[in-house]
Length: 105
Image (tube, rainbow, N blue to C red):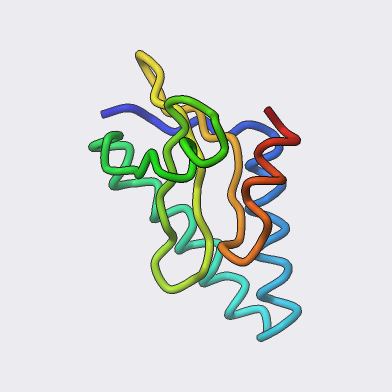
């Protein structure tokens, strides 16, 4: 099992997503988004190769994987390292992911 380590930007993305859903649908929805995002890390911690390489390839960022958050249009973006998952972002599926990741690269 490889533990996920969120980069500061990924941590801020998580807070921002929870805040967005809380503002749109109430504190309960924000809490559910936060919990669902954290729960989505569990399967990829157990099996890092579950995440898709497709968006990483589209963005020309080798080995970047993504994994969706159940019940919310959010995706984690991460690299598998020898001893952990290097989680770089949590982005909304409706965002311009290629532009955001390209800017961050």
